[in-house]
Image (cartoon, rainbow, N blue to C red):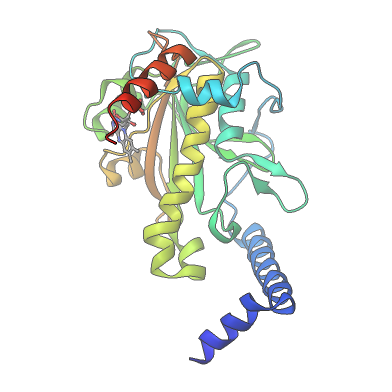
Length: 275
Ligand SMILES: Cc1cc2nc3c(=O)[nH]c(=O)nc-3n(C[C@H](O)[C@H](O)[C@H](O)COP(=O)(O)O)c2cc1C
């Protein structure tokens, strides 16, 4: 009852709304700062792979990326470039606000429960002077760097862990999202676990889909895999749960929807509407 009247006061009056804004902003940023000080994995300066800086201009509109996005499961046998990997990771969970380190994807209470890894196949990523060594890398959004977790091509292990889905074996790179549920649960309880973390993941994964499409690449969100196997392959700490694998490659077949096709589809459906 008391809680409801406080809530009513906060939402119903201008002063209340102002106070609510101040309280939630302080709460969110307090947790961001706490996070930055206690929750950052081991990052080593000397072995870090410095990704090219993200580009903020592209040649494909958001409308075109939305229309031409499909789940792509067949790729040609070609590497990605380090620039493409940089762009995909930035889109996934990179920094888009430099005062507090807010990200390209929204997150409940700015708790950022996700972590991002890539599994690079042998010859999967081209650099200026060769190829990025095959292995599993952790992505640090703040310094926009990759950190080696383990060396060696794990695509075959990942493929078996993902119920032998061929696209996981054949993609030059797989992005893997993990979740540290406790970051969101400590603020929102069970609602954080069952609703907010999966919603956060959906936002970040859609960014990957759209950025891949805009770069002429293809990806698919893979949710079917054995958690424990993926956890072992990525050498994840206990608190992290793998939640998506997104293989990325150059599509064998490019999908494209024209405005005309879309308009025809809509008109056909409209003609069938009842009076
Ligand atoms: C939560 C979720 C889990 C998925 N898991 C898989 C998967 O394990 N393997 C796969 O090939 N596709 C998976 N997909 C992709 C869907 O099959 C695909 O999005 C759907 O068929 C619609 O096609 P579209 O993405 O091209 O629009 C998943 C999609 C979502 C949202």
